[in-house]
Amino acid sequence: MTSTNQNIEELLLQCKSGNQRAQLEIYNRYNKAMYNTAIRIVKDSFKAEDIMQESFLTAFTKLNTLKDTNVFGSWLKRIVVNNSIAHYNKTSKQNEVPLDTVLYKVEYNNGIEESNHNNEKVKQIMSVMKTLKPNYSIGLSLHLIEGYDYEEICEIMEISYANCRTLISRAKESLRKKLMQTV
Image 1 (cartoon, helix red, strand yellow):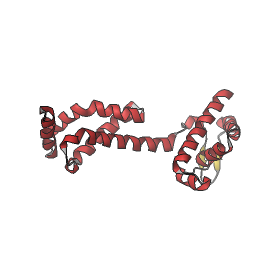
Image 2 (cartoon, rainbow, N blue to C red):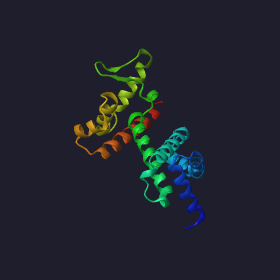
Image 3 (cartoon, rainbow, N blue to C red):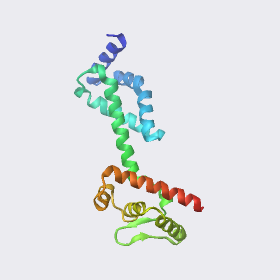
Image 4 (cartoon, rainbow, N blue to C red):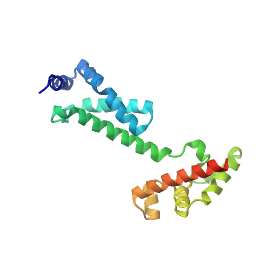
């Protein structure tokens, strides 16, 4: 066993007893690698930093569940990956199209609410949506206008969850490209 591994094992034992210096030493040894893992998934420096720090907190609080201290690095990386993917899925589900691109919002009782300021842009977006492939147009309408989530769209369109996410993503990209051509 190398002195570095042994040292990590000793540090982890100290971390289990709440030694903050040992936690800081572990953090200093692993933070760059964990940040790089997070940034590759979430593609946002500030979010990657937050995810990395949350992951360290999770790891330190759940350190007693780690059975083999020799795999701490890979265990920690798995926590970072899981947290990064969860964040990515959450934000991609909620914000795949920026608000300034959508230019309208869904009201449960009133359907599309258009302000006078954006009226022409909303008409343009709706017009371009009609030129998309039928399944793209339907998917986007259900998601952006009607406010259905992916699971509901899967049931309505009778497609799998993965196909639904792909469909909506490709439809949004197609809409973006067509809107850029009209500008």
